[in-house]
Length: 370
Image (cartoon, rainbow, N blue to C red; front, side, top):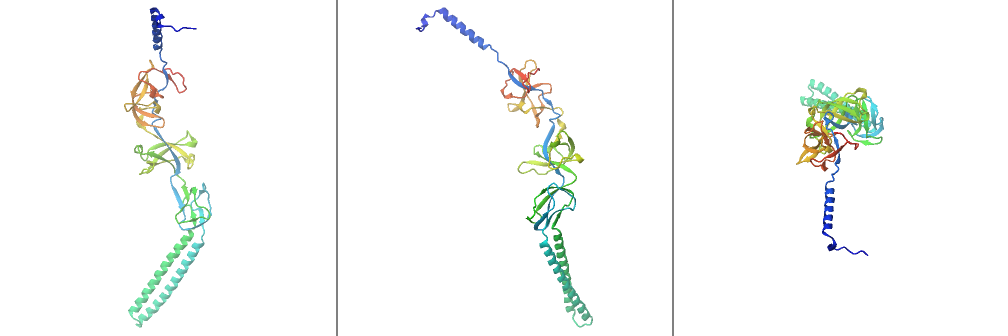
């Protein structure tokens, strides 16, 4: 059985040997170099593409109108469907005309009665005129009859106007397109009772088409009517059409705080279809000397933006302050601080220390030669 070793049994020479061996082991561990961490690096890109501000919107006709009947009634027939192309004056829907025909008959009867009263008043006036010439009646009696004739004539005019209104309303039972265009919506159905002015269909007129976009309030000051733009349909990517900013809404939306902007285009037969998604690109020519970096490359130092620049010889990183010009869809547009020849760290910037060496790699995790 093994006996525990007492400290008194260890010679001074053995203690010195153990201490020296321990010191050598610690020294060897301390001098082991750390492996540089891998970091994704890239060159800042030119700002030619990043200077373009891109907005997504929908294709609309420049003129869109909601169509409705001018009288109350029950829809008797719907003559077109959504998506149909209609000509100017073409019938879209019809109301049941029975009640309006009765109103026309009533107005015509009132007109006939007013005319009969006028004819009688005219006969009385002629008779009183003859009696006045013979001095058989007083001037006062003649004036009374003259006033009766004027009242009867006024009643005829009133009845004629009422009959004309009734006749017009009877014709309003047919809803017609006021311009040639495409029916983009139909909300009225056969058998539905509708009120006067209630929208039944939406008509997009033929001719000019536009793309409607929304611009945030912090960017709306950069745009003015007449400014050129490039338009690209999502369904036909890569094919750009020229457009021009036509209209800026004078008031921001109360909920989204964005401004509605209309950009007109003239693409002829190659124009995108109504309702399609389109991208509108505005190019800002003021940033010709600027560079763009990924948003993930941005670091904050003392509350100010900065990026990590890699020394091409030592592979050490150093923090450099930058000035942000704008935030874009493609990344961060920098006014100053970097140039296109430098290498910057584009990911994991919060884990780096100033002067720390790194192993540069690209987006495919392959070593990069600086």
